[in-house]
Length: 198
Image (cartoon, rainbow, N blue to C red):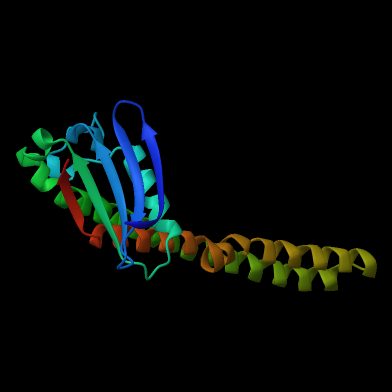
């Protein structure tokens, strides 16, 4: 292994590292004393469907986010020999892949929901804009005071455009972080997971 080796420890349970070897593969290494420390202790789901421990997820996603998109990655889980010999150890890779694929699915659901809300807001915003434009034209003809008519006209136009700010924000900006998160989770789900006894 070469390049930087950065470690963060959680006393008595887990040590986490990131390393890069000569081939350019970045290994995100998690060293723990028991398999149970990798997963959320209160999740009653079957082993394959268990949620990862929040610290493990945060460490992995944080480092993968920092790496170039083209950088190859792998995840290495280091366990004591007796833990690595357990049947559950052979299913750690499957559990990791399932968890991050599920997180990507949740992100895709969130994105669809965001666009659904955006369409609804856009429909409302367009109706408000049309109503404000019509009202501004009517106000211009009904109010004899030209200054007051102009102020009301401009105010209604501003209200109409402000009503469209939220859908514009959704379609221009809000979807991008969700899309990046989906790509991140899919990348991690596809990464090889190695279980090492040491």
